[in-house]
Amino acid sequence: MKAVVYQSQKGLSYQEAENKRSGPGEVKIKLKAAGLNRRDLFVMNQKRSQETSYIPGSDGAGIITELGKDVTDFNLYDEVLINPSLDWHAAKDVPETPHILGGPSKGTFAEYIVISSKNIVKKPAYLSWAEAGVLSLSALTAYRALFTKGQLKTGQYLFIPGIGSGVATYALLFAKAIDAKVSVSSRDKAKLHKAKALGADQLLPTESDWKTELREDKFDVILDSIGAALFPKYFDVLKPDGNLVHFGASSGDNITLSLRSFFYPQFNILGTSMGSAEEFEQMIQFISHYRIKPVVDSIYPLIEIERAMERMQSGNQFGNIGLVME
Figure 1 (spheres, rainbow, N blue to C red):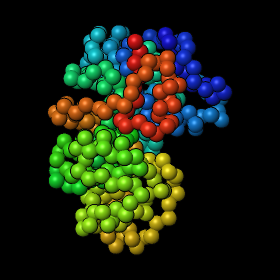
Figure 2 (cartoon, rainbow, N blue to C red):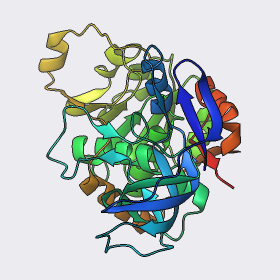
Figure 3 (cartoon, helix red, strand yellow):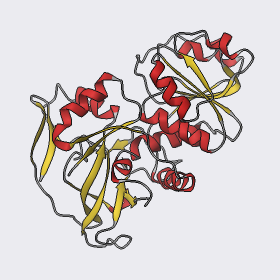
Figure 4 (cartoon, one colour):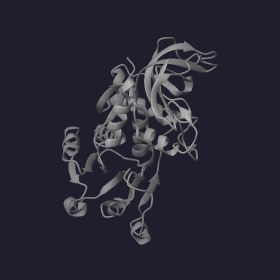
């Protein structure tokens, strides 16, 4: 089969790779589409100093072409999408570090993949292959961050700094589906206008004085993936007993925090990463109920992986970047 392979000394290449058979409890899937995530870049950077070779990619959707022994929940030619969160079943059983498909395990940037039947669900029929292919990782991360950790409710006020990523766009769509009020920020005016078209209630330039612009309003939940650059500003605009849910650090890991500014208003700082199989099922039910579709920024053939990665690295995308296998 053809696949994208990452080798620490050579980088990415489109080449022949082993086409495995499915084992007990596994299925073989002919992939129709896959999605890129920031995690793909992070893992490659992490492994650059090691001798390693693997197929990247966490998101994917396709058709079952082979059933392993003891697989009873699925049939040949079922259309499915992949849950990339491995070995995490119940939401309450949080692992020290989530295990995620696509490094070191063989991922979805390939024509075929063999995976446990516990890590697939039927593809919602209303989603195209491209939409299903980019869904899983970002949507699962957003669902857990908003609802399991942030406890966002109808009528509450959510802030999404740095709108434009896959997780951020899902968070906006999910929050508006339950009639929450949503503010977003960006340095990019075009991204703010696109967020407005998706239902954002207020647009805040990243460099502006948020406290002045909000007047007396404050947020029930803030969903942060930026980290150090903006972290101190959040405490000016979070309600007492509000939830600051943190899942990334694109601007750096280290912050300086005034403990009094944190404990007097009784803020809740909550870390999150990915999600469980239980939450994945809930997320699929949620998007199906509200007929939510991913925001697809761009689609590339698998062979053009380097162009797709350049788009991801530029930070200019709005929504998800996808790959198609044919």
